[in-house]
Length: 315
Image 1 (tube, rainbow, N blue to C red):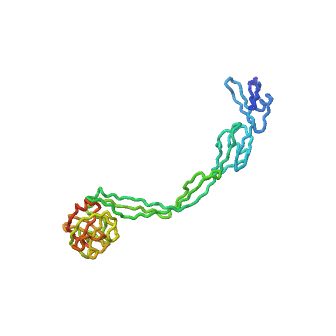
Image 2 (tube, rainbow, N blue to C red):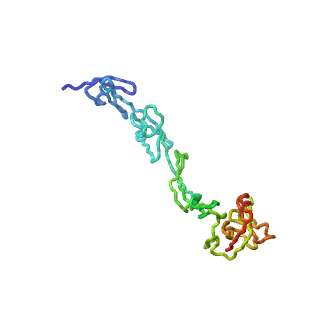
Image 3 (cartoon, one colour):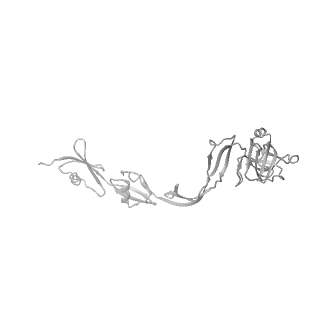
């Protein structure tokens, strides 16, 4: 059986082109028939074209320059990728090193220099504060009363963490920072408030070990029947230096010393100021020691609660 004779165009990337007739397809034989020689690092590609003939492309090797570590390298290559160039130039990459163009970029004659970018890291650990968060236990839907209170039930405490940062440098220049580890030194404790409604004006809680039933404390040393008036002041502190807020009152400090926490309610229980702390001196002390001024946080409210008669229970 006669062998098939192919028309083969042999094209040299250097410019020469020859057409040969051959019954073989080995590139070396076809090049020899065309009077061309395959040199070191050259490459060939044989494929069929649209008219049914064959095309043997001879790509001559060309130099590609590589810049790495302040040095320049050259590699002869005719086909492949940037990764192949580095392999021929004897340049190796670290785990995070990279190149421009990228390693998988095809090489072309006349392409620019391949640059190797070295990636290094430094790490440092810093102790940092984690600010405490504020949480609320909202019981307003389950409670009744005309006063809405927020009572601190757990004091917040900042936490501490050791944070390890990794700084990335590319070719010796700073690039970025990332957190690579966090170790808790002290847990953050949230500040917790209980929100609820109550008919008591004051949100202050009873002293430890004392309960209130039918508006009478379970334990007290004295009970004064006193006149109560409402008052308001824009000042932040009373005569004692202690604050002014719902749950504070003015009195004769020789009768009820500053800082004393008492329970204040009307005898019939229809008015409840609640637990309150003596922080201010009343203007009435020269005329009536048996009087207290109950603090309200708005002037209108203080007026609305003008004069009442109350029992003041002193633990």
